[in-house]
Amino acid sequence: MPSADGNGLKRAILYARVSTDEQARSGYSLAQQIEALREYATREGYEVLEVVSDPGQSGASLERPGMDRVRDLVAAGSVSAVLATERDRFSREPAHMWLLREELAEHGIKIRALNSLGNSAEAELGDAMMDQVGRYFRRKMAEKTAENKVKKAREGKIVAAQRCPNYGFVFNESRDAYLVDPETMSVVRRIFETVGVKGRGINYLVGALERESVRAPRGGRWNKTMVRNILVSNLYKPMSAEEVAPLVAPEVAARLDTRKSYGIWWYNRRKTKLRRVVENGPEGRLYKRKNDARLREPEEWVAVPVDITEAELSREVVDAARAVVVDRRRPSSAGHRFWELSGGVIRCGVCGNALQTTAVRRGNKTYYYYRCRQRYNNGLRDCTNSKVFRAEKVEAEAWEELSGLLKDPERLRVGIECMIEEQRAALRRDPDKELRHWHTELEKAERMRDGYLEQQAEGIISMAELKARLAALGERRKVAENELDKLAHHQERIAELERDAEALMERYRFEAREGLDLFTPEDRHDAYEALRIKVIARSDGMAELAGSALEADSIVCTTETTRSSS
Image (cartoon, rainbow, N blue to C red; front, side, top):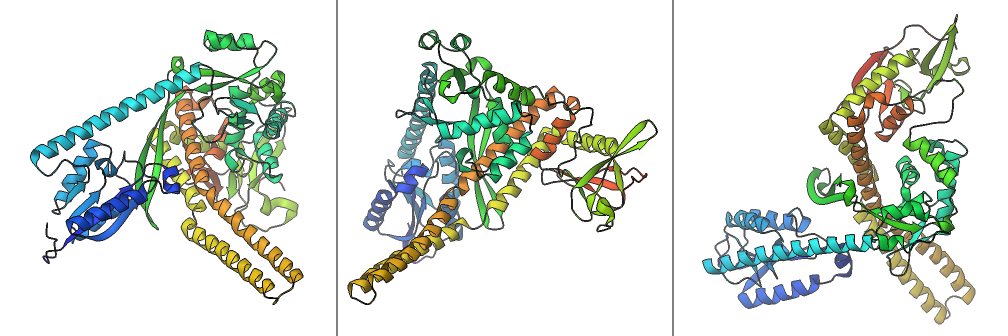
């Protein structure tokens, strides 16, 4: 077919795709696909305009960097055909194949696969039938795989779908059971004892773990969600064999040891659907993976007993800590009120510092206020914001505004996505550029090492000088390797942010139904922190909610005009 430039040349785009990150890293099948396509292009007289590949991309969606590049090239003109080794390299979904074929046909382009039956109407019908049959077998295979996983869980085995085990455990050699990891399980014990025995809060615990550089789950940083998930998980709650037996299959119950204690690992609790979305950002198109998850019916859940005898977790301590989180209890405050906007939630609109709390006694009644610490501490006047905010008033009106967000599912979804995108943008530097830089540093260090060895062999430098230079070079390599290791965890951190967003959505969707109006001051404080919402106290006597989870700043209340004493 002649190209659009009328010169009689046939120009082709070669397209190759592999479907998993593992295949992308190893290069599996990409090279073979491109080699076969080049041979075909040469044989058929095509000039190769560009080779486009999609490493680690699923064929279930057309939202892929390489496929978008193909469509851009086609739209620009001067293309005769787009070639792939097999039809499912373009897409595994027949509907997507039809859409792609029609889009390219508008530019006079045909998509061609080496395994296609031909160009006739009968051949196109045969290709379409093959696509549908392939889709059928893929769905049957997915169903069979899911059934086998549920069957495995019902047999009392861990389904190691995730790369990392739950915190405090390691996989056994066959990756179908958990073994207690002494190092991280000691941190789990500390978490339960700190909350359940010492009565300290989760914020205190997160700060202590971060200050001490204690290894967090998945190599990330400690946060309240991580700690709360550990506290409420049945995996860490010691149960007897008699308590576990009704939850599992009879043959699994028969294998339980009455002398041991067990936790419960739940399988099949959620149904998750992964989808790809593309957004335009300052650096170009952003390709994101979104997880749509919902809880399955309880009768579909599968309980897997895990031997946690060696974890040495006390049932009494675990129950006490869980009561603080699950039952929304907290240690007695000895008659003092809980300040739900404390801890930096309410901040001065002039200097940005967290407001301090103060109580003023007038007659037989006590009044509670928030005020700027920079304005009132030690009589200094480092801030011009002299307003004080009546605690009951600002807390009630701020919560009324925030609960309106939580009760509106669409606003909540948009707000949480904005919040996570802001965090993602903060994490996003230029990972590709940094990878190239540090790989170049490693290569440079390797060349310098070879040079030093040659200089020593030729007598230019002494053995002592060689050792000193190699030691300095080793430090340089170590820095580069550490930076590469940090970059390797970049995508894991992004995925963790998305999981946190999903957990927040699930939590507040449920609690909106149960009744946000019943939230305790502690619950409200947690909501502000989880959504990273701040209350900004302005010098004109107004306060407003601010945060990326809000569509816009919202005025919530006015100040109390009476000024507290300093």
